Length: 130
Image 1 (tube, rainbow, N blue to C red):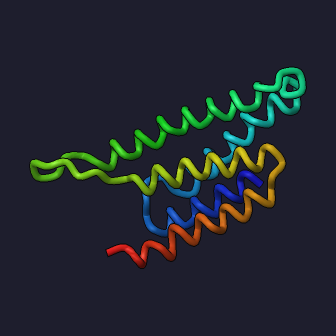
Image 2: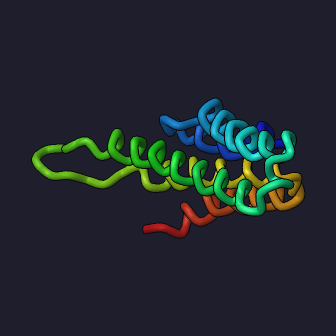
């Protein structure tokens, strides 16, 4: 499920020719799912009430670095000024991670619905921007 929801977002970014495309979003979502599945499957989440929230917090922080790298890469100085670019790509990476966490926790319906809503935001709301 994590690969599927990552592919939904990644395919849209690939169609828009964004640097973080299909494979990146699939890997982010899949990796996030694996990180939450590990404590669930080995039973650590049963022994410690805060184990799973700490894992999710760690995944979120790690993905923040990945998103920041995307923003920095896209925001190279152009003709003497700095233009901030890549925020939507960074947000798409962030949401792909959240979709993977949801899928890894067994919330596949939430993950699928959220992927569809993210696709609407990326496709429909782009047309409303000036």
